[in-house]
Image (spheres, rainbow, N blue to C red):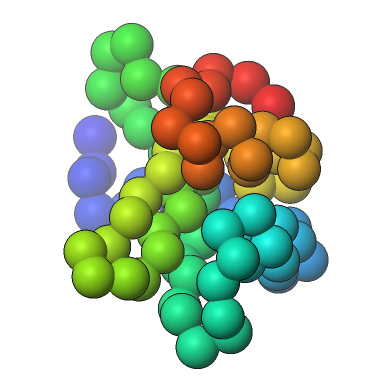
Length: 90
């Protein structure tokens, strides 16, 4: 197995932008606060195949995980994740 040639799951720019918009709205953030959205693939036992991580670049950085692909995440799932509720679906 070649660990250096793993494919990253691709998220559409539209899905990423929608997640950012919902995050800004839900947290009441100004546009100056950077938000990073990453869609990751996991190969560890018990780990979901794809998860999306929302990182709000405040001091300290706040991170939220949703166990789904970015395109499959609903507004309600974002709000739940930002509230600290553990999500395994959308």
